[in-house]
Structure formats: structure tokens, C-alpha cells
Length: 154
Length: 154
DNA sequence: TGGGTAATCATGGGCGTCAATGGTATTGGC
DNA sequence: GCCAATACCATTGACGCCCATGATTACCCA
Image (cartoon, rainbow over all chains, first blue to last red; front, side):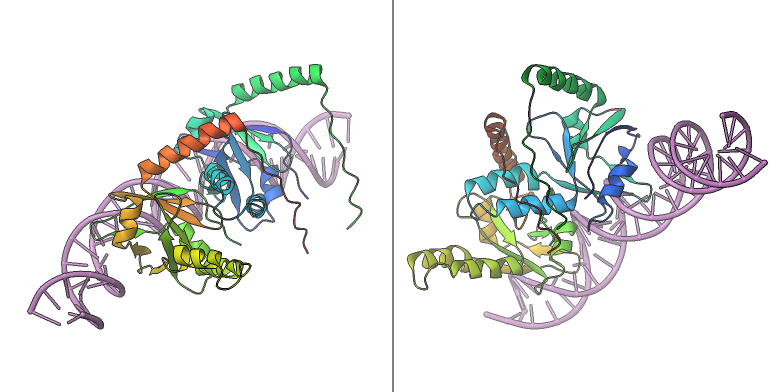
């Protein structure tokens, strides 16, 4: 399937360009759109990233709401209206729009944080702090995850 | 499939012309009608936009109402009767009809707001206000979206 | 096992192209 | 013949593409 794993910190040059980690690009290479979809997280100071396939899955999922329903409206505004298609150049870099940079507080460096099906882009220090917080919470709460049975070969 | 993503603010010139964002034109390029379908939103001060394909899907969906039913009547009046086909010129601009401009309160600029399968055209300030409201609500409510399983190759 | 080599990836900067925009000309309808 | 819609053209500014470079990693062979 191809997952987004690990965390990579890359430089943001003075043009606002930043290299998408090669492994992330490899994960996305089979998709129709050669680039990433990025939108502002509506809960944290970071940028959400994914591929076009995931966006289309999101779109399919909203179909369970009726057209013109309020839920449909909100999700659209938060995600689809905010999403940008950032195609990468031949070297694998994307150009980060100004408001995404502002929202995540990016400056010198950007951290690409794998989250499985998707990934996030953080200001490295901010992510470090967030990670520490999550880790300390995990020590207390011991979160669990019900494992789905393996989907046999098919 | 091709989704309408992101938000683009373009100028409305003194003739009432406005460029349809190139990416929107690209998603519509495969369709039969080279232009957009536009009608007044019946819930907000904006213009709804889509391609001919979506119009036909809407038409199919109204079949779930009985012919001559009140719902069928209403939807027809609200959408089909109000919809117009705006084809773009060689530069990719459409001419906005007067009543659409009035309904959305457009003047200098027009914001093309992607909504996945469709898009909307807003007066930029009005959309900003609407978006801020949705965003603040999202911070409180933390909306979630049940993801449909990936439509495996089949 | 260690050194050398080649390939890949991240980075920096210059240049060409296309999209958005504004204006003018032309055509067709009333 | 006037008004409006559309086609044509010209400008500019952002973005995409090309080059070159450095650094790290992976690979190969002695």
C-alpha cells in the first residue's frame, strides 16, 4: 500500500521551496497527481498533507451526507476549500504558500511527520514539544488500539 | 475523477468578466460542455458552480422523488430553472450575469471556492467571514468524518 | 573489512513559460 | 445603427523547469 513513516526535517529556501522527502514521494508516485495536497489543520498549528487518492476518498466519504447539508458545507470549507494542490518540481520540491507557512509558523526548516495514510508538516521545535506532550500522556493513559483481523490476501 | 480544490480570488473586470481558475478548467476539460453551470445558492449569498456531469447526477438523484412530487417541483425550480451555462472565452473567462452578481454581492473580486464535486463563487470578504465562523465552530466541536474503506482496485 | 566510487538526494539560483488581466476590434442580434 | 457579447492581442508577474553543487548514503571490489 505505501505508508508515510518517519520524520524528516528539510530546509525551506528563500523562495519558500522545500524538498518533499524521497520516501514520501515514492509513496505517492503511483497516484494520478504528482504532488501533495496540503491544507491547514483545523485543530493544530500544522499543515496536513496527503495524496490525491486520499482526497478522493474523503470526497467519497462526504457523499454519505446529503448534498447541501450543513455537515457537507463545513467539511468542504475546512478541507476542500482550503486544500492546495502542490505539485513538485523535477527535484521533488514544493512551493509552500504564504498562509500555510503562517499557520504552521514555519521559517528555516520544516518537519515532515509521517502519520500512516497521511502526514503533517510542522515547525520542528513545535513538533518536538507536541511529541513530548503526546508521549507523556501515553505514559499515563496507556492507549490501546483494537486490531482489525488481517484482510486475507484479497 | 477530478475534484475542485482550494480557493482562488480573481478580478471581475468592468465588463463583468472573471477568469475561471486554470485548475478548475482542467477538471472540467474532459466534460461535454466547455464551461461551467452556475445557479444561485438557496442557502447562502453565493453562486453555486459545477460541471454538466454533476448537473446530470443531480437530475438522476431527483428521480428518487416521484415525478410531479412537491420535492421534485422545488428542486427543479431552485436548481434547474435557475441554472445557466456559462461558457468561457479563449482566455478562460466567463461573463457573470447581473442577477448572479447581485445575489452574491460581487464587485471587484470573486472567490472561487472548491467544494470537492462542486464549487462556489463568493464575495471574498463574505466568504472569509463564513469561513472564520466554521473554523471557530470546528475548534469547539472537533468534527470527524467516518472514512469509507478504500475502494480497492475493483 | 576498509577504501574508493557511484548514485541518490537535498539545496541554491537563473531563466522561460503560462495564467491572469486589461484593452481594442469585430461580429451578430434587436 | 446601436448595444452587447465574443474573439483577438498585448502586458506582467508568478510559478515551473533547467542548470550546477554539496553532502550523504549505498554499493562494489580489492
